[in-house]
Image 1: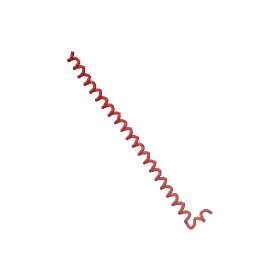
Image 2: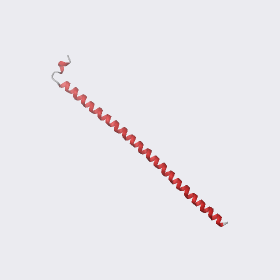
Image 3: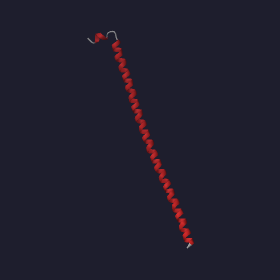
Image 4: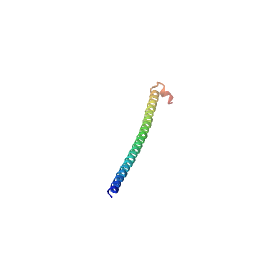
Length: 84
């Protein structure tokens, strides 16, 4: 009777270790997936910010070019003749 009881206790301990190991693996996998999703979201945000910055820089460059052209037209000595 004691031998059977000891066997059952050992089997319970083995099963408990197996279940605990599975829980650890599942938790690690969940953490890995969450971390991967966070990294993908960060990369997406980075791409978006870079795109917005590039568009802003292009807008600034275009504005500078426009101002440079309009400033040159206003300063040219014959500009008043062109308007006629």
